[in-house]
Image 1 (cartoon, one colour):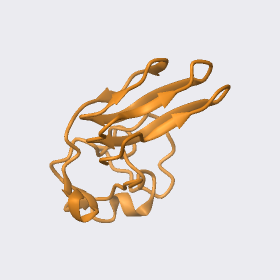
Image 2 (image 1 turned 180 degrees about the horizontal axis):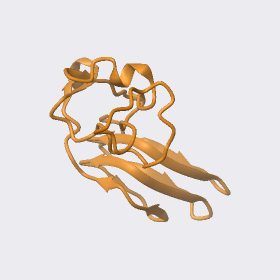
Image 3 (image 1 turned 60 degrees about the vertical axis):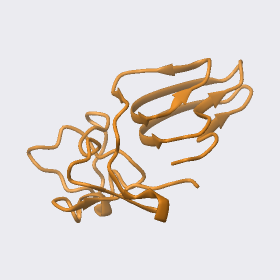
Length: 130
């Protein structure tokens, strides 16, 4: 949230970014050197752009993740957030509560953890690299 660059992949590097949230970045959310290979899928790029050479795959959205108070580093998101259950279908749930409504794991740093679903009806967790 609010970073200049979220992720940069250097020469000859490879990255697949899944089930993530980039929000309100001042620069490019994801950048790559010309000879790097970068794919982004099932990710919220809210008010964020990616650099040349970054390949956007399925499941990309640009929606407000509904963080509670990012200015105060409170990156929980509320139940109105579009981020729950928007992760890659078939991706392991690990400790995340799986319900009949789940179509995928929750986006963000806590997707797939017990913290993602422990407050499922009130707040969901996310994170910042700030």
